[in-house]
Length: 219
Image 1 (tube, rainbow, N blue to C red):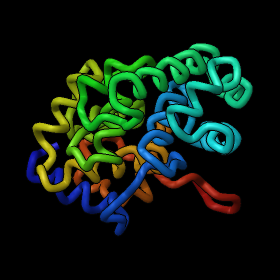
Image 2: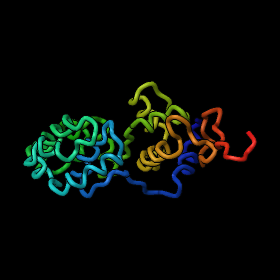
Image 3: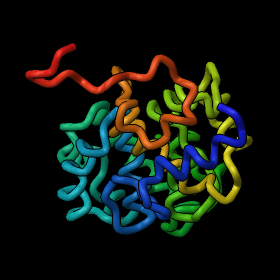
Image 4: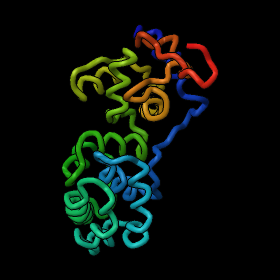
């Protein structure tokens, strides 16, 4: 995609949503951090089904640490990798208390030093809570970076760096959410729905997919 086409493409797919937010349900920086850790290799919908009971019992680092891995596990067994995630959340909570007074730090290195928190998780928290212009490259953004031509790359980090370098700075923070939502609902993995994509004219993907044939239509 030409650099000049990136801004109009993003404006088109923003769907009039200038201040998008994550679809994970949270009420505090800590509950967002927990939800993002749980979302690794799991859908936001699956996480949102599990967290209400967890947060009802433990919504801050102190109560989560006291609940412990076994107590956390009771609430998240429906989520993939729940055993490892339960252990990480218990350990993460202890470290937040010990190192940061129970607060979620607004610092990448401090976040990535927490159990279960990698670069993508840190990017989500920095973007959503602290307003940093980060790009958390999940499967949707990796796919769109390559498919649309915004920022092709063979690795997650290559796509992340390309997006940060090419997206206009004033659009970078919301672009993280616009791309995720576009990949989740329109530019789908198996078959992108190009016929109803508002950004199709700027996207380099070819051939564009056509509307499905409905009953009674002649192919």
